[in-house]
Image (cartoon, rainbow, N blue to C red; front, side):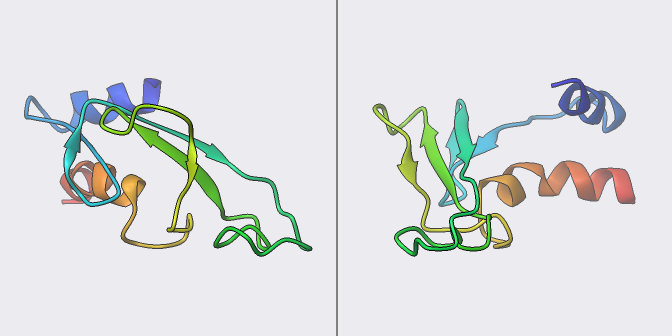
Amino acid sequence: MAILLLLLLATGAHSFSCKDQNNQDVDWFAVYKMPKESGDNSIPGIQTGIAWYYLDSNKKGALLPSTKTLDDSDQVFQYTLIFEYLAITR
């Protein structure tokens, strides 16, 4: 949380929004990183420890396995933080 606040302060006042797995604005999202399970292949990335469960403000209910892995470039972390990262590195 402190890092996110620092990023917002460092980049100036502008609009910031969480993004969902389709790069659409959401109020919030929650994730749970799954542990490495080498004998399981039911979720993408679980054998290598990069699988996660996902929930956002538009998908009320339980956390569901993400079809993306943590090393994919087209997932919520990249969508949400890319503009902050680019603003800092300029």
